[in-house]
Length: 73
Image (cartoon, rainbow, N blue to C red; front, top):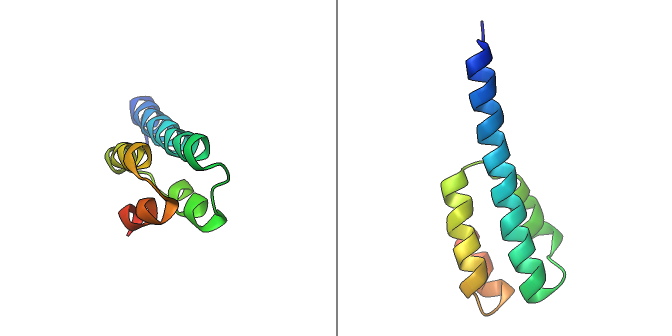
């Protein structure tokens, strides 16, 4: 059985992941305009906040979408 505290922690983790996904996509849209569906889908499937934070840094520093795509592999 799941306790209330476990549910709260799960909610917080999902909130962090959603914020991370949003941050990466916002950076990419600001820098490159439209984000290809394949890249967006890959980002939306991610749930690790640390990996998403790393991708946000890649998004900020990448000169092209192809360069950013390499970070997704």
